[in-house]
Image (cartoon, rainbow, N blue to C red; front, top):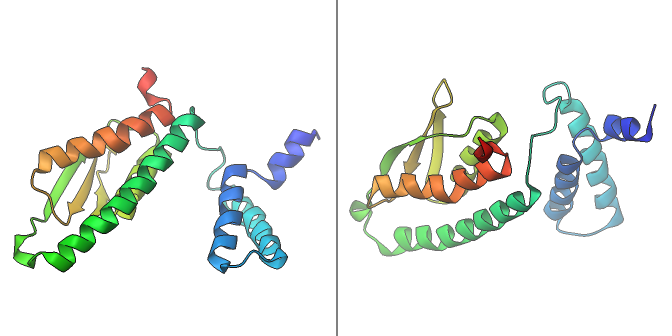
Amino acid sequence: MSVRARLRRWLPHPVLSLALILAWVALQNEFAAAHWLMGAIVGVVIPRLLRPFWPDPPPVRSWRAALAYAAVVLWDIAKANVQVAGWVLLRRPETLRSSWLVVPLELRVPEAITLLAGTITMTPGTVSCDLAADGSALLVHCLHTKDAAATVAEIKARYEARLMRMFGEDES
C-alpha cells in the first residue's frame, strides 16, 4: 500500500480534519497540548466515521476562490451583526419589512448548494429555510429588505457566483 493510500485511509478528508482540529482548540479557549491532542483525535475519527456517507472529497476547483469566499462571508457576517443589532435596538418592529424570497439556483454541486444555504443562515438577518426538491431554488427568510429582487440578486452575485467559480461550475 502506497504512502498516499495510507494517508487517505487515515485522513480521507484532510481539510475537514484540519477544520475540526482548529474548531476544537478554538472552542476550548486554551492552547494546551491536551486540547490539540483531543482535537487531532476528533479530526481523525469524525472524517473516518463519515467516509461511507461522503466517499469523495468535495470537488473544489479553486482554493483561491474558496479563500476569497471565506473572506467575503466573514465580512458579511460581521457587517450583518451590526446591521441587525441596529434594527433590533433602534427601529420599531412594525417598520421592519420581513420577506420570504425564492432564490433560483444555477449551482448543481450538492456541497456548493449546502455551503450557500449555510452561508445564508449564518449571516444574521437571513435564514435558508427550504430547498426545492429538484435543487433549483432556495427559500430564504429575510428579517428586513426594502427590495426583494435586489436582495436575491445580491445573494446570487455575492455568494452563488463565487461558489460557482470555487466549484468550477462557471466553466460551461
